Length: 133
Image 1: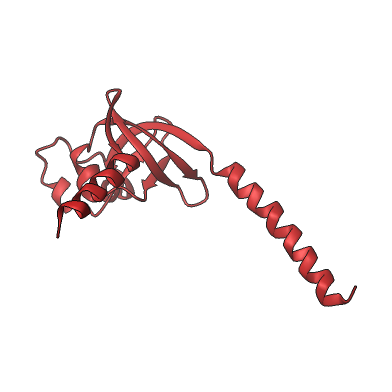
Image 2: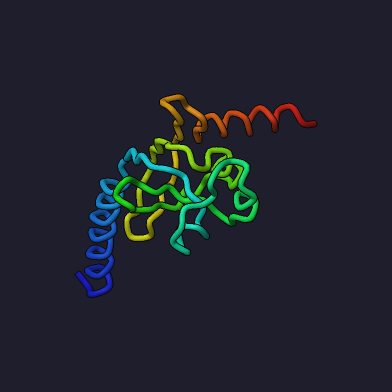
């Protein structure tokens, strides 16, 4: 067997092993916390104070902050959904990337009630595409 074939075989085995490791790490996890404005979090104070606080409109993003003080960016949720639930305790289920502090959200619950899900959004997009000429 020549060197090129050996390297290709070794590379193929490594790819299979790494792919399995990524699949194992991509398990769904549920994280509970409060949606807080990113600017406020970075500056170190609690804001917005309430839903009428003008800071909600100025925020560029909202993050999920756990009771321990850990925070996660909700990478695939729109700013509108995050702003709607600002200051509320939410349950987010999705794939957590601890290194980048992100969650690829599959579902969002508020008070135990489903508020948003990836599947529902896909269905809505599908029905909207069918309704347009």
